[in-house]
Image (cartoon, rainbow, N blue to C red; front, side, top):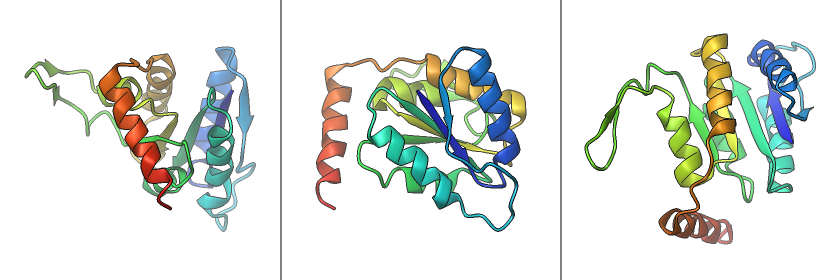
Length: 166
């Protein structure tokens, strides 16, 4: 199950992503917004996505806002949610891994969020991404597996330990 949500700023992009996911056979639950209302507030919709993902370990979520920042901040407040923010390919134009290997894959940051952190929610920026970039980001997010490497599992367990503090 893929849960998706946005406020008015991300509404149009959310609708395109929802259709894209459905066309590829994903089961999608739309958590709103269901219309453009400039007075709505993203926490009302993003919290529904985060609650759903928090309660279903096999699910994923996609949240969309103007920058994606507030959406990511909110989603990460929920136990078991590990939300990664993707602004645009331009921000991640070139990366260098620990061995010094350079990559021109501008979506690698999404792959790494899945492979290393088992991210289960993706926050997207409606203001900084084209429709094509957003759809590619979603595809990369859903196609990238978690590695289950011991060092990554250990780090995720430490994140879970901090959830208990609050």
